[in-house]
Length: 78
Image (cartoon, rainbow, N blue to C red; front, side):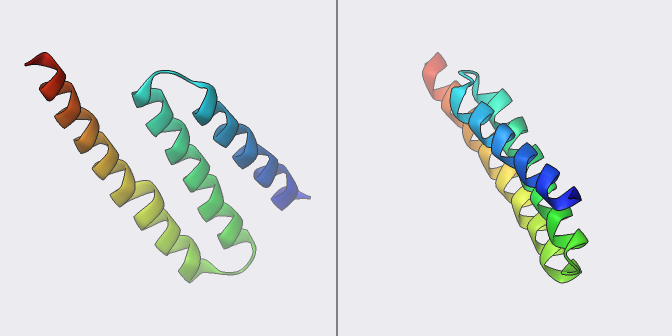
């Protein structure tokens, strides 16, 4: 039951990511979906996968997206 609710929330956040126009909001929503995915893995007794998902999905990818977003905004200002 809990996993089903979390999966529905992941789908809702993913759809919101596609619909929203602001790129920073998209990054935040993707981070939330990834964090919920890590929680699903943890509840499903796969803590190693959950830690990897949290580190890569929430951590590294969001840092990369934020860095790219900042770099493209600097290019647009020129």
